[in-house]
View 1 (cartoon, rainbow over the protein chains, first blue to last red):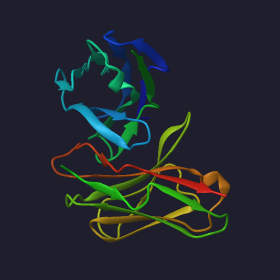
View 2: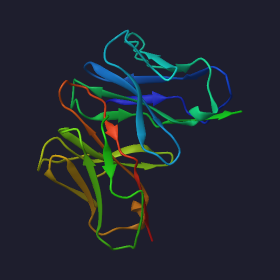
View 3: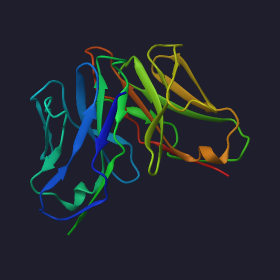
Length: 114
Length: 114
């Protein structure tokens, strides 16, 4: 069945370090891929998205490329800030099934220290 | 910007009470969702609705019901609250067209059942 596997945390980095959070998916059909971010005490916010193979989503210095051949959508940022400390969720919707349901990974907690 | 508003940020109720969690969205979205979020378990879908008066069970519907009398409002009902329903509850909405749209989340309701 549909599933998302993302890097288990927690991840702890120093400010200005490079960030990668790995995400792979298993889906039938043609999924659209998303990264969501959840800051402490808040709901989820859409961070970026990609709707077809080789698309690159980007926002706030974060990037992720839709790699169909490796079924991956890894999140990267070149230089993290303390304000990036949050939980990050990889997710997809699947046109092969119910195309309005999201399948989520379990989330990765990122802590950035000054 | 899409706005999804949950009626309470924090709620404390007693075992056996009937509890209503309300969610309103302002973007005329067809789809609305209720999730619960628990440490180590990620987000789990309780119920969703793809149209007024329509509902479908998600992954963990037991002990919950929902109501969607108007397009903009989706209510989650705990018929007889139990301590194992203490959790963070998140509401989301999305558009059906075009397909594979992201979901937009509210800030969440942290519910404690004593």
